[in-house]
Length: 187
Length: 429
Image (cartoon, rainbow over all chains, first blue to last red; front, side, top):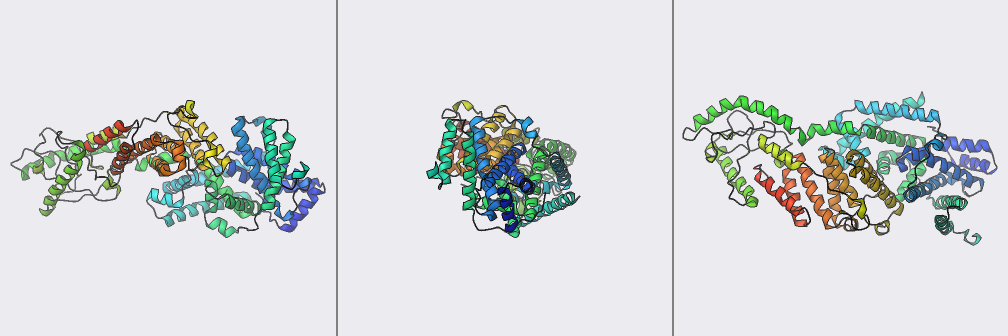
């Protein structure tokens, strides 16, 4: 994932270039925003396939809007992207409920970036290994927190630990995973 | 349309309605999306989050749980789009969640087996061997100190630390409900005498069986041998060293903890289902799209439930729970799925959540008194599985009081629990 630092000046320039029809600016926009949009879409949809579809729709919608000059305050580009993402995610859920349609995996595959997918698989494999090395109690804490959606207080009560102990254990494991994660990203 | 240009929200709603009537208006829908995004951007708050707040206050976890206020969620997402470091934090947690899900069954089984009631049978077997080895010495010892009493069985506490034993059942003529407290009173008197005589020994046992063990208390010494005249010489209950239960009691408790899942029918979604699946989105208020999405996930999960795939159903219901955190039926069936997957502790949490929704509008809409009784009944089952008999008794009492098709079943289970002879403290109400 890119760590590119954004600022309002670069947003203004980027938006202006897109409005002027600069295709390189559009590529730059997609390169910068795509990983983070995909991340948020994955969190919202809880389905990576759907998140990929949604990401493409969001980027297309934002670019179309920018070309038409919909965004009047360029410094609000992230908010514009987020607003588009939120609306499309809600529309997607509504449409899915109404139609009960199945996805066209063949079509969506064409949008995939194989390098990105490979990296994602590698990161996931690494995290699985890291989690397996944790103690049973740490694994339970992660499971209850991240999968079951329990708060630290609830986990502490469930496991008979103090709230601070749960938080400390959880942050230690997350820190370890993040460090591994960062080292992989730097390779 | 030009006249509405100044109000993107209204225009979007009008176009969405038109879109629903005619699928050919795809282009109009694209326009709606643009206008909605423009509206959102124009409303974007000027408040900005900083990385310390995002990473230090468990905001990302709250976000992933879906328990954030919509406004806070918007702020966080905007920050994630702007900040690489926080985006990485989110990615780590997201990937961890997916990795955990992939290995969920393995982690749960490992974790649950460490504290589960269902390890009793193996412990009981080990205890039988231990008890048999100690039996001869034990009988000789008791016979020596009670020369006027027929050779007793394994009920007293010798000087050396040995497993404690629960008292025998009271005579059958006593009323079932009143018997347990009376037995406790007699036992307490006996124990007091024993302590005064200085012969008692307190033995620590694993905190995994009875209610008192759950609280981490030590078990009380057994009653005096001469307080057991009714027991026949050939009645030798096998005592489990680790749980303080006889094998028969353990087996009976195991049987009582077995669960038959409630049936579910899609046929009555509107009103006629055995358990109504929940009120329509219009009754919920709040985030309508979230509720609607939650219903879709709920129905998908219940397909798995009906097919008997409880692990998959639980997964789907957990997703539905994030979108419909106040839907009692989601929590209830998740609890059932956890029970059927041998996760009684997780089941308790879900069922208790369903129970706390008792006073909410959602509970009344989606379930009614029937689900109320079912929730207490299955909570009792879950407590029996974890060995928390005091809570089980309390939940069964509530199930009986709630009324419904399971009343006689709950009464029977309550009676069996009290007849079991395990030392259950009277439930506090």
